[in-house]
Length: 187
Image 1 (cartoon, one colour):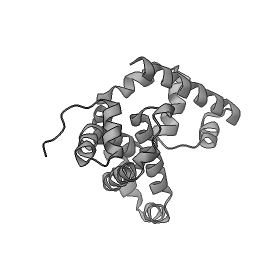
Image 2 (cartoon, one colour):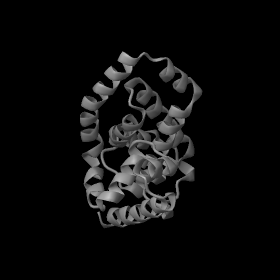
Image 3 (cartoon, one colour):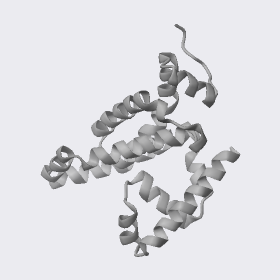
Image 4 (cartoon, one colour):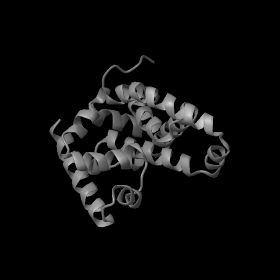
């Protein structure tokens, strides 16, 4: 079986729903870097991120039948799976206990290495141009989207951190997502 070189999104989805392994390999080859970039921003630790990316692709493979093209694009659906899997991983008791038991110098070193590594990951995740898409949002909307989707904050946590009402956060996030959908339709 020869590898697939280029697929339209519709063809890719059809093949994935038929459980075509070449289509899955194509999906992994073309989207793993971008999804990993999102995961590493939330999870921070490389070893955790590698576990999460595997989990994400298993979920995509098992649940591709749940994807509805009328509700959005495949990439957006996969971003949500990656984000949710990352947040679930962080919320798991094992990870929380390990982070509590980590010594202070290790936390500082990991944070510093993340700062330097995040630039590389941002470059990898931006090869699809998502950073450019976010740049088209109002700055206050972009901040909310980054906090929610890249850093894993809940809407309540965003409201607390930015000292704005929860209702305002919800309205702005919804408006930002509507505008993102429009921007992505134009591309």
